[in-house]
Length: 221
Image (cartoon, rainbow, N blue to C red):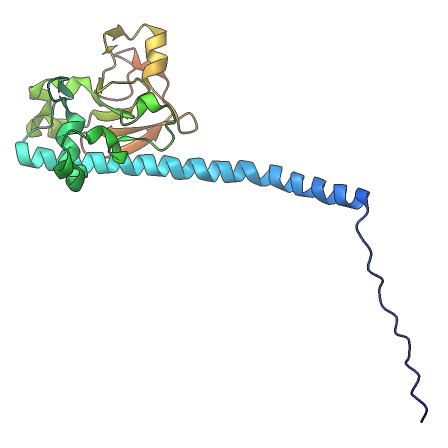
C-alpha cells in the first residue's frame, strides 16, 4: 500500500538576532530607562516628603496631648545630663508608648523623629527642632498659644540640636551665613516642612535672608 506523500508546508525559518539588532534593542531599553528613572526618583522623593509630613503631624498631635495634660508645651531643651530632657524625650511616650515603656531614654531611636530623606548618621533622630521662642513658659501656655499661630517645629540639619530661633542657633548669630546654611535643611526638592502651634503643617521654599529681618519675617515665631 502506497504511503501518502506529505505536503511540504512553508514555515518561517527561525534565526538569531544579529549584533546590530541586539545593540538597537539595548539602546531602546536604555533610552526608556533614562526616561522612567527621573519619574521614579521624583515619585520616591514625593513619598519621602509625605512621610516626613506624617512624622511632623504625629509630633504635632503629641504636642497637643502634652498641652492637654500639662496646660503648656514642653520646653525645647532642659538639660543634657544626667538623663537628657528635651521636647523629644517629653513627647516620646505620646508617640511610641511601647518604646517609652521599654526604655524612656531611647527616644533618639524613634523613627518619627527622623526624616526619611536624612542619610547622615550624625543626624539620626534629630531631623526636627523646636522654636526657641517657646523656651519661655509664658509663650508655652495654652492661653498664649491660642492668641496667634506661631512656628513650633521646623526641619534642621544641625547635629545635636533641639531648638532654633530666627535670631540665634546653638550660640551662632543668624548673620553668620555658615550657621544659617547648616540650620535650615531644605531637603524636599528645595522646600521644608514647618509645624505651627495650632497643629497645622505647611511646606515652604522660604529663603533664609528675609527671615533675618523682623519687618519682612514671613512666619511668626
